[in-house]
Length: 430
Image (spheres, rainbow, N blue to C red):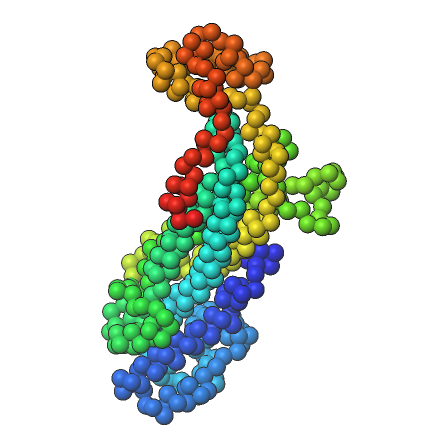
């Protein structure tokens, strides 16, 4: 991932240095297990543990010649260890090292993302509570519908984030497996006890069954979880973009001191973070599709997945960390224009209470078909004339045969839209 969208902690996980360090851990742990089984002399294990190291530049240089990364690595390690290096990688295949290491890296990266997501959850819960009773207009199809509260909007995002936390935890569990099972997964030249030992030391579980590789449905689930999380963030960002439109301006991204919005128009304050989040989510969704396409491989393995994973795993996790960090900052510092929220709530002159009028007429004895027709007729007149909906109703003889002032006071009351907010908040755990 390019530096622009990379944060240091998670980027280090995908560095050559960290990757080779985990490779060395896997190889040494396998030697420890083999020694415990009597397959490696204790003296040789001591030499391996004392001398085994690598030089990243040297490994990459050797790879230029041998065209095989694991062989290049083992060659470099052997240069440090000497004759006892013959016991390293005994009975193993490259994918035992590669796939177990990839699981460790994905677990490390996923745990960072999980912490970010849990922070997202906390911020959204706080905002939901703060704006629980701030009445605003709800919109369907982009058109004013009925009142909601800003707190409910944040509560919805919080609830969705809770599901994303569960998805990610499940994906982390699925990917936290390793393998030390040999060339085609049959343990022909190595004991399953070696695998069990290595996995336990690395905080993994042995995969129940493998071929030459850990099966890629696991990786696809992990990547799909990332794609869902990113798409949910895009959903929230898209809402913020709509609510920051000049003619709406209910929410606004924080505009920092010295920030410029446009090279041409000095007045501009653009929702650039939300737009950035929307764009980057597309990359993660695309990567998840590539992960799905990595599931079907030839027989016990080919390497068509390998080059893809070298790109999509680092890029996706680094981007996901970046996206969540940006979104958390965005929501923490979001500007709420309560006056504009009130203005927009009243923009349609009371039309948003049309269903309440309809239901009241039905309650008072009017047939639904007739009630709908008469309410719609008056509503269309309100659209055209911009005269208050309530005033038009008061001047409509047919409607006022069924309604009185007390009814109208009850109908045109914003407070009633929030009567079940406590119930909803309790159900979402806020």
